[in-house]
Length: 522
Image (cartoon, rainbow, N blue to C red; front, side, top):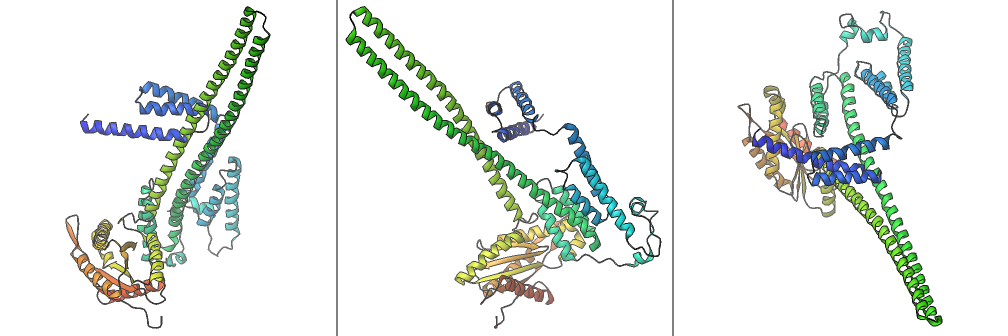
């Protein structure tokens, strides 16, 4: 094994230890015994304890968890039945069933978590029977048709399509719709564990021939985003539940501390009274004593009684302090676990927010991020009336690039242009990928004349960008439309003017910069 492989193995082992240590915080707060075992596991990992010792602790944790779950877990047989029925449902969903039947089955699936498996199966059968009945009760044309199940399960060779259906034209899918779908899929591809799903969806969009085929793709995309939102909700819910338990333990600790403080005060007062009483007794014995030996004996008895009570008080205090210290240590562990989990969630939410606002291909801000920044700049313009220009850029003949060199080459062009735009603008400017081959730019403190000069310079620079793909050089040009915020403009009106200016630039032969002011009446 090489040194690099050994180093990689060491790094993987260290990362695994960090993951196990972090996971151990998830179980905090369930029981004191489990908290202690998890603490031992963390301490063992930090101190690089012997693997057998760590195995022993892990086995103890597993046994304890099984004991805890015995009272809560669903019987195994029931789990298997539910999982079986869930798989049964998946088979129906993956089949080439009519979309309206799938919708009804989807409603049944939503009840899986609440209903028993037998009821679910009955519901599925009822839905299918109702659908079959509705199909059979529908008025039929004179041409004899086959039943629902024969149409569903017959082979392609046996299917007969009437001339009437063959002649029915399919409505083509607009390119704008394909672009919007691809934009959604790009957002999905930026999320962990959904890259493969995004690739398959991209293939489906590429093969999309008619509007009628959109339903399945939209269902898949929607389902993916619903699953992501559900996962994030469950994660947050788990954290809040664990936080609730930890808050309860903090309250319990505060109550115990208060009770301990009251008990200490009570015991101290009682000891004080007993010592005073013993001192008074000694004083009385001294005054009433008739002989020295008798006085000596009485004094010794009282002193022994005082010492006994003091020792008893100290022992009790020591025991209480140990219990209190144990509670403090447990509370500190809980707070550390909460801080770690809170920090992790903050980082994860910040990362997800960044992903949600970033185009995964070009790494530029996306349309959602643009809308947020536009609102900020628009509000600033309305308040201070400082110049603000809006620019729409569109790569010329981009479809031709995709057709001639392939979509991978088109993606490379978008990346190169995005990098050039971001590097060429001022720090105060904002550029985002608006969709497809379109980019949008906000230029604060820039009137229309200055914006036109800057964008002409930018357009010339784009022509000098040479994209190399598989030993082929692809030349790029860009058309640009500009408008400035004026009078009582809305963001929508300014964008519309910039879009019209872009359209003129395309009409004039492309590789142009055109601008458009607001009408005098606006």
